[in-house]
Length: 113
Figure 1: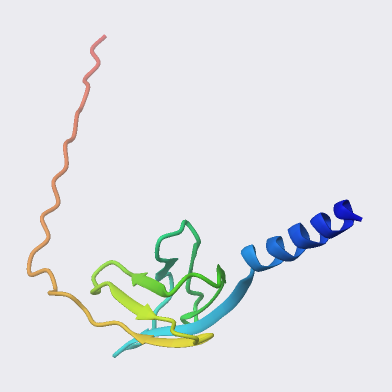
Figure 2: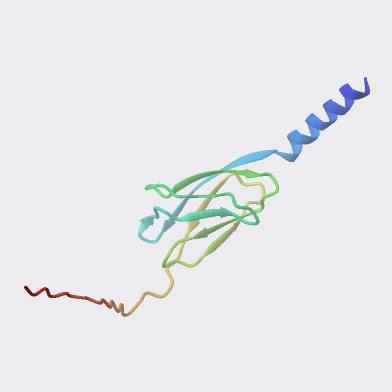
């Protein structure tokens, strides 16, 4: 009988310890939806990217409270989940580069006969 109770307790504990939720949402900017935004559950290695419509879906542990959104050229955004299963994020651009410098090196060989 003890074994059955111990097994039931362990199974119940494992279910609560491994409890997860699905968080979905959309990421956009003033220009429209953003494709390829990195979405990361803070404090974990769980993450993903937005699709071509700026949408994402992540399975995260119930203990996760914050999602972090990052994209090149935009300010990093953190969103508190606080019981939410659906979030909408509007990212703002960081300062735009005024100048881009491209350098290249060419190496030529000459052959003589």
